[in-house]
Image 1 (tube, rainbow, N blue to C red):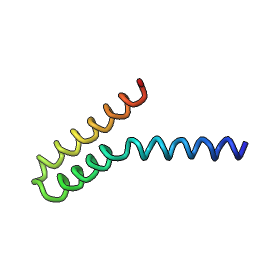
Image 2 (image 1 turned 120 degrees about the vertical axis):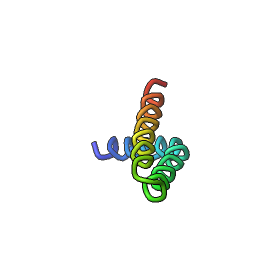
Image 3 (image 1 turned 180 degrees about the horizontal axis):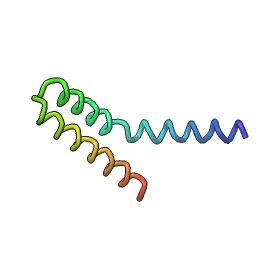
Length: 63
């Protein structure tokens, strides 16, 4: 049981590292949008980032 959990965690880590580059870009963009852009634009940017991340995760699951 513990070995199965370890294997699963290792698989999740590898999966995350493979998909991390666009995700890191999105996170950095979100931080930039929230801190430097005016409030209304920042909210729109934040929501667009949430949508992009959601679509990215869905596209990864379909494959």
